[in-house]
Length: 278
Image: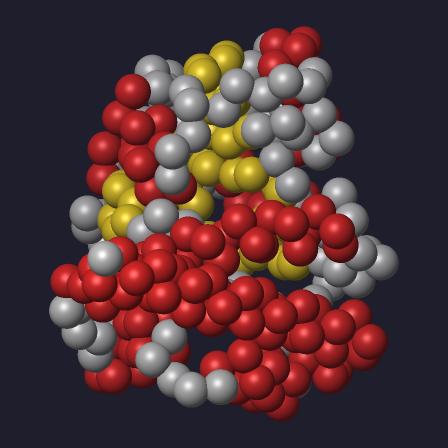
């Protein structure tokens, strides 16, 4: 009933644990961006099917995978190498009947864990993600942190998808988010150039999580001092302080990431202005 899709790029450290959490699946696909470590060897050893494609951006890469990978089953569970299917989610999947109801995609609650193994229960910003879907009914938009756009109704399953974003250390997390900031800034300038408008109504009241998040991001990027606003929102609004030192540290790291985007946007804007004057 359910195939598994795992995106990889040099994931020899995290992939074994990810694969171990989906051994129940009879159709595991590793979609690799030409890793130069043991990622493919590990995947093949676990019996996974390998598809390779050079990475360009998140939405294009994911859309290509859904359109071209020959999944055996009508439903696909998409996970990253640093994520794990928990026992509770596994039980939910074992009882899953995709033929019942009209939903074409399902939201899964994700638990993010800090470097010390603590669940960031309060600090986590976006707890639900569309990760189980019919591949022909799903598409993605945005270069980074893509939004999921299902073509049909959405349901919700119980259980947790566990995420370990600091499995490779804080240095790796920072380096990776520097790259994300480059793409976020590029998206910001592209939206400005297209004159895209964002809706407060949809940002606050949309029942579609992906649409709501899209408009929230667009409006948030227009706010002055948003790194500090994000820190206040996480620490006080979402009560990250209840997660102790791990929660406030995570909020600070997220604010630093936001500042990376601010700096990169300024840099790209200056480059654009210089080019246009020249």
